[in-house]
Image (tube, rainbow, N blue to C red; front, top):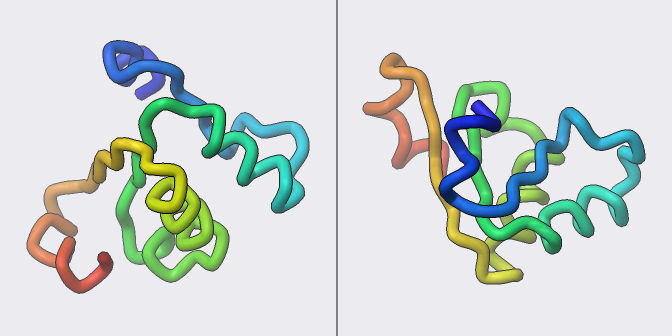
Length: 79
């Protein structure tokens, strides 16, 4: 996925983050150029994912939603 996202600019991946504090996660979103939200039932319910999505909105990042075909009909419910 990282390779496919390169044309979108600087990409930070939260699961690669060595420091998982809220401050470090927020900084990761701040330093990125675009935000990719991998939508699933689990991510939609995740407190951390919701925080990251709010930060991306707060910092004016371009937000791309990626989801499996089985969730496409539910995007409106999750967001």
